[in-house]
Length: 350
Image: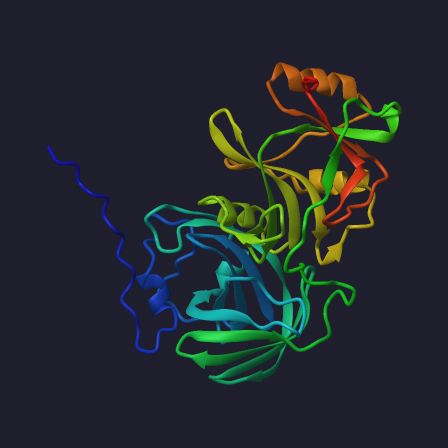
């Protein structure tokens, strides 16, 4: 006997001029937790509510919604709102949403329109400076984003969003186009003053830097050249960091038969280079990011006890240990004695 498909709950018939008709037509109120109001008259608000929702759908993006005439006028912004007037971001105009959507967070089921996790990234109030069919100027007051923005239509549903105010963080810098990684010098023995060092496993993998911005990721190799990342790593890693820009340093190693990106440094984070920040503080900031997923991990590090780490590396068949001075800066492209690679097994003399 063939099982019956679940019945789709029919949306109420649309009234002429119904601004939520497209929204209701795309959603089954019996399957999605999203608010799906009936065909009653639209509520009247103050036209001053805004929300930005982080949407982990097929492709990570952020939804900007502005209350206007009883609905939330909406744009999908793939890279999030720009933090500087130097860069415009694409904003795709989508269907109007009900006002109740400003409070919505939840998991839209697979098979439904917009399937994926939806969370509130920021919300607050806004003021309208101009509103037309081709241009919208607003002043946003949120906890994570504030300032004057303009949305302008380019073609069809495609708009652009531009920040009109100076950068939210005037000292912020974009990620570098390329960075050659710092390299350790090989030594036969561990440092004599272990309390001044942190110790990591040497993974024996391929050096890979990840440049994550707006939920997207690009990669460079050990010589700073652009390379393709492993399939699926870039988008998933970008989704975990969201809008936080970061430059990560690590290795693509084979662990338990699976390629895994082991991240062990963060030379740039949240618009600020960390090259002059001591290794200990960079590692603490990296740990705070909580990077862990099916294809990537934050590599462990151990202050002070190098002998135990070296013994563990031998037991696990790893190439060795990298000792890093706790006060060492990040020296791009340099082979520095502040980092030392100590092999698990001493080399045989010929």
